[in-house]
Picture 1: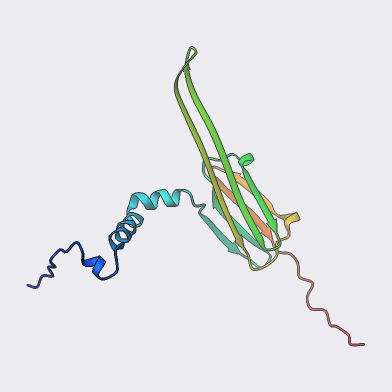
Picture 2: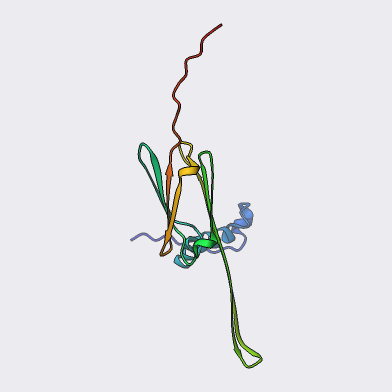
Amino acid sequence: MATNLMRFSPFNNIARFEPFKEFEDMFRELQLSPAMQAFESAHNMKMDVSETEKAYTVTAEVPGMKKEDIKIDIEGNRVSISAEKSELKEQKDGETIVRSERFSGRLYRGFSLGDEIDAEHAVAKYQDGILELSLPKKKRNGAKPLTIS
């Protein structure tokens, strides 16, 4: 049975010019921890995009927001979705504040699609934390022959 034992030397990394290796390892371990992954993914907007010949359909998770909190911008083939919410909850007992809580959150997602979007005919629906966009493609006028004069 083979074991890989190494004698600890506090000057090993300095001698190899890697004085911050332990810090890098520590941050790498933090990034891989499930708690950090859950925190990181909580701030990302999850979405699905599907395409037909005539349109794109985008389904995005925007939990805890009202439809008034959501803003959608379409410019050419670029789509951006943003949502922002702020809340202040206070529990008072007479004139004394017993508890006060604040919440502020912002979600954003921007992406480009393969075709330009017909923004005038785009439709957005929001229900139960799910935003669904129907984004029709702009009709292409096709190639126009150019006559040489």
